[in-house]
Image (tube, rainbow, N blue to C red; front, side, top):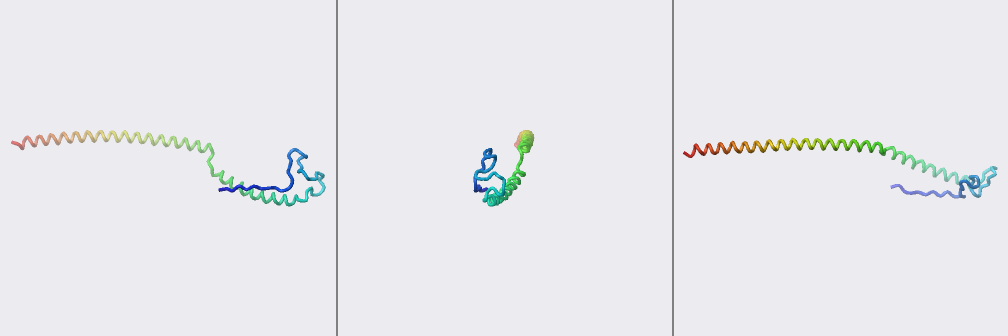
Length: 128
């Protein structure tokens, strides 16, 4: 389970497009450091970047082991063909089983008739 972390960047808000991209409360003059808290803010961002990089590596590692939709589609096609082949084999086996069943019934009937013939013949000659 991945825990959710939220990072709070202290200091002033950055206004995109406004103030020429300069944060509110920052001297836009360019002489020396603009904000006395800039070093602590940069340090905090650098700490967060390390954590973000570690998370990105874990995500990339996980994604590299996941199948693409193309691979899944190919696998689905292969599975469909394998299932159809199994179905064909099962049907062929069922046909063979039915043929063996039919042959066995014929043998049983023929054997019963022969035994009945022997029994009647034996009874005919032994009763006199």
